[in-house]
Image 1 (tube, rainbow, N blue to C red):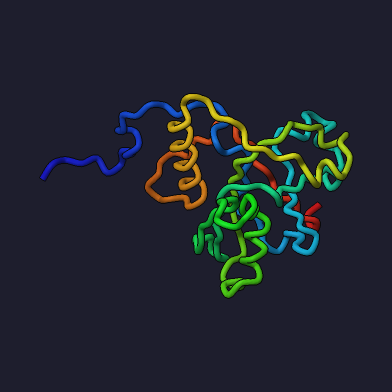
Image 2 (cartoon, rainbow, N blue to C red):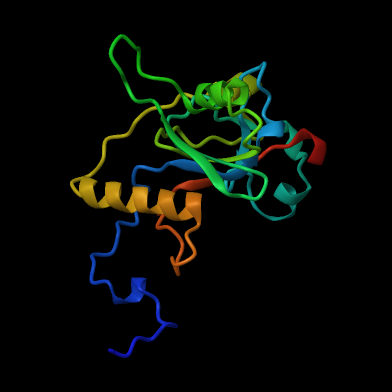
Length: 201
């Protein structure tokens, strides 16, 4: 029997090209958001992008309940979890099918699951959005611009395949948290979004 170091990381032995440090396909993502905090009737998936709130004491003392951004219309992929953070479903939002106009968005798909046959089987979710928008000052922009951002799919560079593979590997690692993955996903410059929960504001 050959000697195997069980304490070594399988990832460390892989000879692969380093993923690009650009934003890649994932532009925004939210991890382990609560279903109960989503404003379903108003179609609001409210969050606060990290790094968009300013820095220092001004940002720390600012009333964060006034600077939510709506991610309902994002398109990408998502994972549903039960109360114990066990993944129970993974899906896409935005795939264009026959006789459809651009596919459904993340918010619409989550809303459908919240009323579907498995509605009581999940309580948390993660989402990974592929649409970008111009960075704005959340403290100064008016309510309408924050609630209805202008989303677009940005053209990728020549390293599309590398970015695609790195992005989807990151989704699998961050969304499913496999025990044998020693490192986190390579999310590049993707913006982590903190969920806004009114009860915690």
